[in-house]
Length: 344
Image 1 (tube, helix red, strand yellow):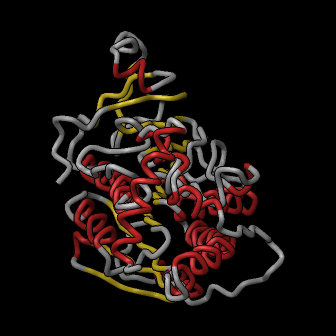
Image 2 (cartoon, rainbow, N blue to C red):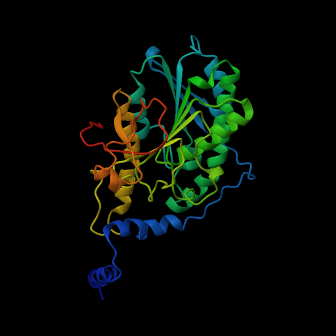
Image 3 (tube, rainbow, N blue to C red):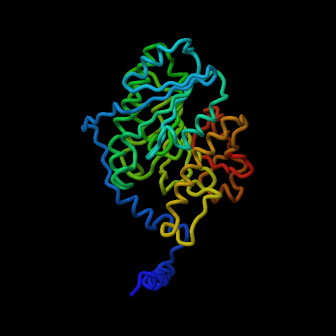
C-alpha cells in the first residue's frame, strides 16, 4: 500500500476519533501532539552541575554616540565601566532572549530598533546561543538549554553586581526577557539581591517559557519579589509559554494563549500548530517593543477570565497601561487587546 493511500485512510479515522471524543479546536491546542511533545521533554534544574557559561557574549549599545561593543561575559562589567564617557546615571536596559536566540536574529534586531532613538539610555543584549542553540535537534537541545538556565542567570547576575560595584544603581536597571530568557531573569534578580541586598528596578517577562517550568518549583520561575517590580506578559499560555500567574502584575494579551494573525490549523498540533505557537509566542516581543515609541501604551482591564473581558464585564474594573510605559503600580491579572494598534 502506498504512503499516500495510508495517509488518506488514517486521516478520516483520526477525524472520527476526534469527533467521538469531543475534541474542539481549543482542546486540540491544549491536548494535541504539540502539547504532548512538550510534556515529554526531560527537565533538569540542578544547581550542582557547575556548568561553564564563559562563552556568553555581551553586546553593549550606546546609540546616541554611535558606539557598539561586544565583550565576553567574564570581562563585560569591567569593560563597560571602562568605556570613555560612560554616564552611570543613564538607564540601562538588558534584553535576554530565549531558546534558539542569537544576536543576529529578528527578535534582537527588533529590540535594537525599539531603543535606537530612546534618550538617555544604554542597551545590553545577551547572546547565550553557545548553550541554547538547537544543533542537537529541538528536543535534546531544549533539554540541554534548560540545564543552563540557572547558570546563565547566575553569570548575568554577577555581571550586574560588577556594574553596581562600579557605581551603577540597580534603580536604573530594567531587564527584559523572552521565553527561556524570562526564566533566566528569575535567577538574575534573586542572586543580585542575595549579593547586594538591593533589587533591580524592573523585570519584564515576555511569555516566560512553559515547558519544564509550568510544573517546576516556584524557585525556578520568574516571580514577584525578584525585582522591585515584575511584570509578566502571556501570549502563548499553555503552549510555549506558561499559564502560571507569576508577577506583581500578569497581562494576558488578547486571549493570552493565541494571537490574531497567527492562524490555527483545522487540526492544531498536526498540520501547523507548531508554526502558530511560535507566532503566538513571538507576539509578546512584537507587542512590547512596539509600545516603546507609544507612550499611551495599551489599555488593560483587571479581569479574572478572557470570556469576561471579551463580554465587556470588566470594562468598569481597574485600568492599567500595559507595555513599556506601564508605570509600575498595577497588580493582579489584566487583559488587553492589540486590536487597532500598529505592532510593526
